[in-house]
Length: 473
Image 1 (cartoon, one colour):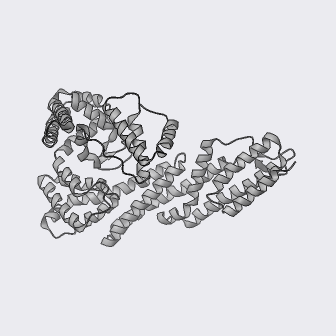
Image 2 (cartoon, rainbow, N blue to C red):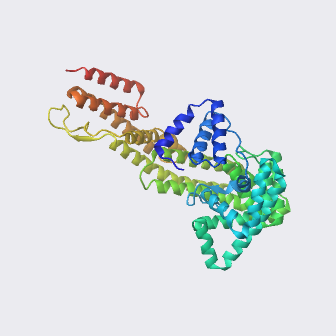
Image 3 (cartoon, rainbow, N blue to C red):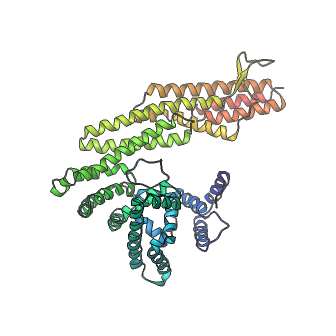
């Protein structure tokens, strides 16, 4: 069951007001209703929103109840992405593919043993057996069944087409093949999870050496598995760029076994710069379309964090070649940032509509068009644009963009909003009735935008003048 964006916002507001104990009880009740097959609630949307609200308040959500599906996919979670096309990772599985893949595993005759093992595991998780042995049986059966399906599909185009159709498209079919490949190293991936908790800020010296041993074990089984282990590490760390320190630790070791594995170790470093380049190109594409200022600001910050993090590790290692590649990515992002600034100014111009002066107005050229009320969405977009411009100096410095450009953008935006607000005060004084009220509403919208860029004293002065003008008869 899906819900509209408006209802999602209403839901978030409601859930955000719940106290800790109430939130926990509601969370448990929603999960229980979903487990019982309830059809009247958007369970996933409710749980996702509630989980975000609890984390925002610093409250730990209850642990998700394990089931066969969750236990099966957990070892591969470090390769999950939101959707195809949003990442440049060397190994990836789109989350929307998980449902179709699981349905296939539970219904295809080639995977009958996996379906039986999953059912038995679910029973065991409810206290009717040994979950550990049944979990191993599930992975064993899945590896055998998926291996057979993928082998047939590789040799038979018609079978491959049927399998893709059953999964809902080529993207999910590709994810199935990736999963089949990763299943061969599931125990290594589980060992990584035990060694490095999800969201780990960094690795201790002890963890580094344990990871080295785990990598050599994986590499001993197959070169590809060794590389997969290191690529999974990025997904374990809270800040993926810190995996670059692991690369230098392994690459600069005198251990002959690690020297021989240099090509696979280098894939971690290559993958990190690929990620940074993908972020830069995504900013470049976004700058060519309509502005989503708040999203742009977040993405620029993340790019800057990623670039700064990689630069710090590369500088410590004295890797000047890698630093130059990072700077090249910054150049691309800086150009995109300048485009964002121009688009943000355009949004503010749209949110300050004008018309040719005429009639009894005291303005001689352009005057605010009080007959064109701003929609809530337009005000929100303009505030986001003003917020982006307000941060432009700091963001420009981090990206290596022109500081003068950022200063000019901020000054132009502040001057425009201030002048427009003052012109609205004149309109308020000259207008009457509904026109005066419309001018007052427009002024309040403009002052909300201006708060990001104009000194609060100046805004209060304009507001006081508007109040005085409203009393004019």
